[in-house]
Length: 92
Image (cartoon, rainbow, N blue to C red; front, side, top):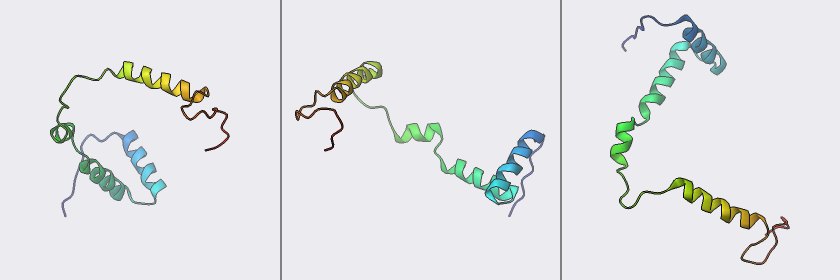
């Protein structure tokens, strides 16, 4: 196995790594390897974008959509349910 040396490693960062490793009950080397593995398992932004191409069609107005959801939610919580039940929380 290869060794890794990090130059100009800040003392504060090292102290934080040592503390995190101690909390997890592992050595600092084990903790750093875990963090690096976890990071490398995640997709980069360019990889994620390549796997999720833009959706065809008109853009979604998120602000407008959230406003519509809020109106529907307010109606549900004010007792105006389609089933005729009140919003008193009396159960299903």
